[in-house]
Image 1 (cartoon, rainbow, N blue to C red):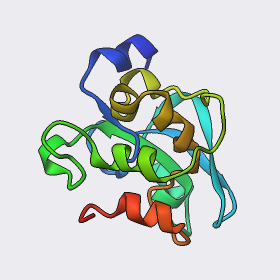
Image 2: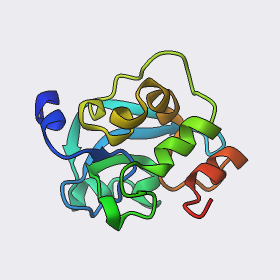
Image 3: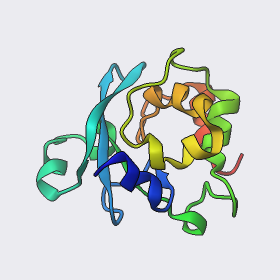
Image 4: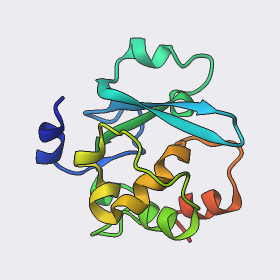
Length: 145
């Protein structure tokens, strides 16, 4: 999927679940449980059962960063206009670096469109299913806060 195609459609959630319609893997989680780091793929890959099986024995959301069309009002992080998760990540979580990661999802990414570079600088440390979150990550991910 070309960058222009990503930018033309609805905003893409960079923290989607694997069985969401239109889901595509755009990154692989590496690092350690305490300090995860996403390695970005040159092009997103369509999610398939075969691809998800490669994550075994752990959950695919521990291994893959998945993007899909934003669920909007169906998402607990959406406030009717913006993604509160993106906003809180920028406000609470320290940047993971100083330069933009080479992310193929960026042209269509809701976080990028909403928060710009500040969101991208935090994205490499975001894991959809994180078992050892920092206090800042826990607060950012909590939709009730």
